[in-house]
Image 1 (cartoon, helix red, strand yellow):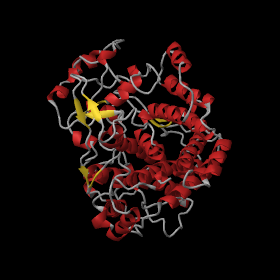
Image 2: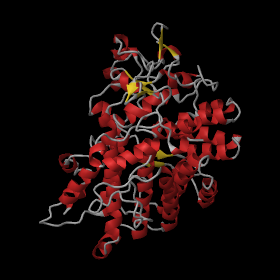
Image 3: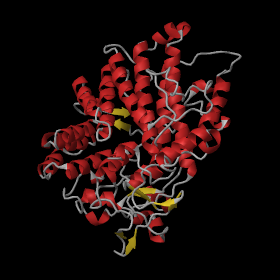
Image 4: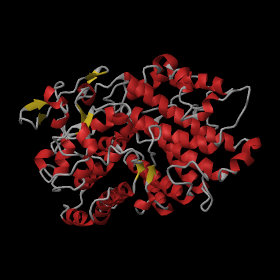
Length: 529
């Protein structure tokens, strides 16, 4: 039966049966022998789904070739076309498939917890309500990722499992699931997160083992649910006025109050469990990605008006070292000439920037095998609180300090930087939030599309002139055609997977028409203010 489900799921989301079966290390329940039934424990499914999710959204494809360079945290020296918005179709095809595959496994946890003959077995692994609630929270996290990238999407939720329009993941009933409007998805995400937080039984384990985010602590999962609801409600408040009540309710229900609350998925020290960005470099042998000159200039204090930011040393290594020298160990340098970053959006691959010593590697803290992946951190919550309280100075400072403390910046350096911060206003708060969101570039892209920050004082915009740090020569950042358009601004979305046009053509046509066309210059719901 499980193999039949795999085939059905592959036909819906557009992945081959072979690729499904090949991932049993991460998604163990997919390839169970129907002639020798066995029940994969829910904690194994949950942990495998989480690891699979981050391996496929914080890797060298989904993140590193789209939101990370588009938000100018990184730049490439090989496939510069992608930095100029001409991404490859398989990037979004595979990302869509990975997200739905992870979602299917969170639903599988819920299904097992609600199967009467399995309840006793699953109760031994943790509180049944808590397992369901944590899966609902992660489902909300996944569907939020999908709706912010594409727009209308096939959708499913636990709280409205009987909604006839919420057809995604019901693979035995709907081979061509309907797309749900962005507004309806967002409304239900807020509802799901509120209900999941209420469902959690604090004091009882979520899972006794297999929770690499909060080690089974239901109280922390509750704070994460409320904080994620705060993030989403704040994003859509300009177009959905009811979100303002959700913001206050989330805060009153208990959001993050310190770095101890951060939602961070732990990485291990092996190739299989290592940080996905580390894997890109050390397992995948890719050296395409480098700190972007736009971000380096902001941290150096050349732009932004914040002065020198000691987080520079946590982002970039100095120039003039080879990869073997980098691996052997290096020292940070006070010489700012050794921190230039890769110029963004070059007209073509240039020989000077293919030599390692001419570029800054990411800092050892970034390319670290066991670096955890941030889902959300307290710093982001503090910046949201500053925003909703008329750009409050106290929360602005808390946000900056919290992110620097999480990165283990020296206390004296933090005090010096914070003491010199310019006053809180929209531009300054959002620019500092942008620095924090280096560890979550998809959300940085969301915030740029919502607010327009950071602005052209920080980012190199289409049509503007950039400079090569090696000789100070200039070039014009000119996007390439992506789909049927040449963007005049950062992409507003990504196109639906190409296989949706053949696997789900009628629903794809409706969704594309709702947008005004399946192109990257079509603004999404939350950005239409």
